[in-house]
Length: 77
Image (cartoon, rainbow, N blue to C red; front, top):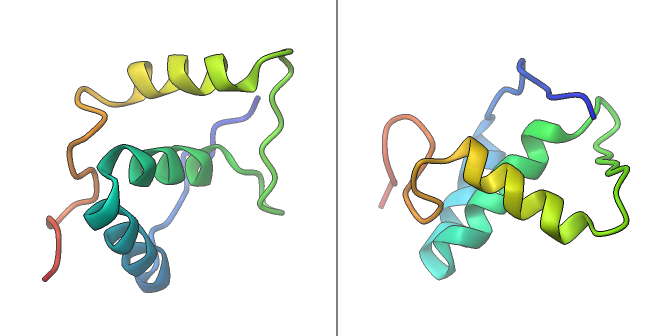
């Protein structure tokens, strides 16, 4: 699995992330993680029989607090 280190948060992504974060912070961070993992075509491929457990493992490795706001600048009102 390739990690997209050059992922750039554009304004639309930030609006979507903020909207999801207001409803469910953990879900917003799954959204962020999957965006970071996606290839240039937006696909994420897990080579495991249980992608859910792989996502949980990656969430733990990627975020100190899976429910905290992760984008620079903080949550916009």
